[in-house]
Image 1 (cartoon, rainbow, N blue to C red):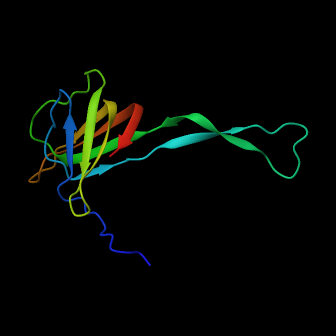
Image 2: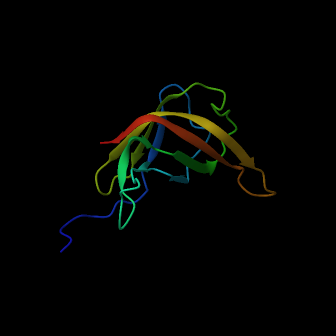
Length: 130
């Protein structure tokens, strides 16, 4: 039985920067998560299957942000800063925060439509959800 948990929607999600500003409205944020390497500890005495231990370090990857561009500049040349994604409100707000910096930024300028942008933030160091 699943209980009374309510799935979260993305509505109400925000992206905050310690010192920079958003470059427009946000329609999508993806990439929240992380990976940890498996270190092979197998040796010549290993039988049956390889043996592994978890790496001590986690790579929190990258955040991909998409939206409608507001004509403002991106912090692509800026230093790493605290980035906070506050996720939705239907299941109670959760904040995903840590240090990050912009590694790529691109705009799309279609005829007779909204100018859109996408940017990528590389997560650095520890990130936490609260």
